[in-house]
Length: 122
Length: 110
Image 1 (cartoon, helix red, strand yellow):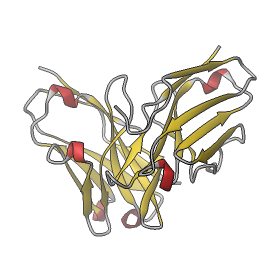
Image 2 (cartoon, one colour):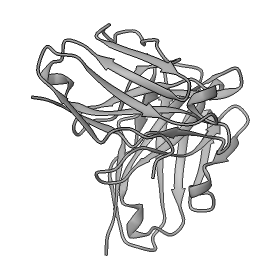
Image 3 (tube, one colour):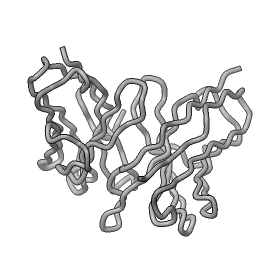
Image 4 (cartoon, helix red, strand yellow):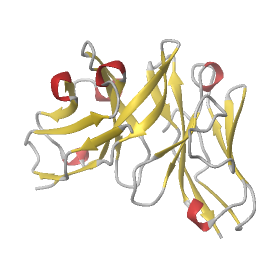
């Protein structure tokens, strides 16, 4: 069974750094793209970026380029989402997802982590 | 504003059928696969439909998907109170080079 297990909820102050994690199991971690999806309170889903753990190829959605860093450690089948300086507007639920590629195109999200709630408040 | 347009809300009575639309363009729905996701209150989204009209293992056949041109539709028959949720469509956008989602539709089963 494919599982994506994320790290627990975080409460941080503006300006602080943060790195949240997502451990994949039940499949070949290096063979699937992993993404991070943001859901702000009461809002919809936004894909922030993706990484292919096999070769660490990383791609960011235009809105999130330069705002976060996505990385992965294939030795421990874990992906990460990192902020260097949090803002109150980063308050959201963040989901780790596995993405299916069909004929070279990222086509759908087939697995979701349970989510990590990040709260940024002074 | 989301790249894909969904109605904010739909409603129907238990046992009835409802459809949820998702409108896009040639750079997304028109030339790529559509998927659908169900998000029950307070939970992570769940994979519901892929490749426009296919159901993952374990998804009942009460849920169906279709696509025509630059629009897609999710259908739910035999509505149950447990179907009350937010529903999102998704697809690849070739111009933005990213997976995009609709703004979501809240289903109320009256």
